[in-house]
Image (cartoon, rainbow, N blue to C red; front, side):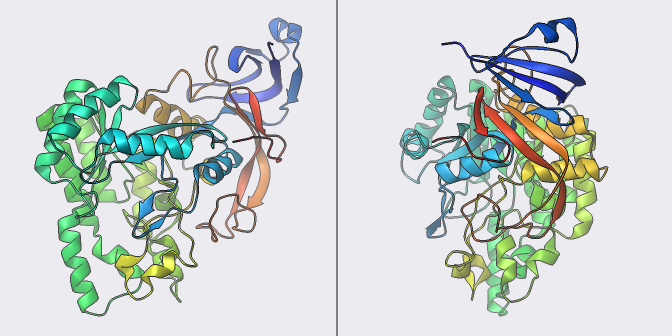
Length: 452
């Protein structure tokens, strides 16, 4: 049975346009847009009419970097696919792309199937997967081709975490050569993990065990060096490259230089690098552990370079790298040794609001907000047209957003399954009101109506 929804009177914002338009939704897709008050719009009828007067009507957010239920450091990320996707919806995100993990010595397929099993039937919104390659060999390289054929087209490699996810330059090059041939995209965690491990060991020998030393040993130059190296290896392989969670001015400069040469090199940053800093890592009484993630938070002066990179399109995407661990019982694993603190922050619920605050603060425009949070991540990972925009034929992933509402971010009120907020007490302007996923209401006027 056909269902029709009409969203009336809002300001429709996409990456390219801002128009006062009504949006007609039919059978889970956008059927048409027409100027508010125009003849076509006046003639539309629907089973459900949503009044969006004085509100923004925007595409659902696409968060291309999340880690639900990720095993790390002897524990697991505290959000399941059920809790994590529900929280994402509360924050105006209607698609996540999570990371399936290949275990050392096992097949890619096995890892992918395990992640399908975790997510299947549990998600409140749409999801896709990237594949983490942690064991590059002849068999896994062949398997990459098969995964690309079934739509898993992005593969993450790590220059960090020796003994866990680490790949050496030869393995990185081989994977890049393979992706150059099969049309896949290599996503790179660019930090010199071998050098970092030396610095970690030296810091611990000096008795430097507090969370702030996590930021001090994972040096800016070791992110910039690895970013440079990844770019050169991608050039040798003739492959495109996507560098994840860029945090440092010097790393942005490497990406900008490559892009100025016309190379297919892309960069993502995350809200934590735009809004938090090493000041948070240095918070007393082990509170800094809440902010331990890799790449680490940087001194505040790096923020300007990241904002500039987002304006000049040297950085194209803002994802969250959402990987929550509770302060009690999980972050505390590293009380005597910062290297044992599970790496990751919660953020999937906060991204759209924080980036709207960046619009209010004058860092980016409204259209750029939608570009970096919805359109560009959808384009980067083959979802655009269905996701990331509001146009006839697109999935009806729609957010009614109140730009005038104010809220205070807090663990008291968030929906992520974690006992703290990285942005506790931060006041922001703008709030998600109603969320549709393929035409179905998930959040209605700040009430959860979705289902697993």
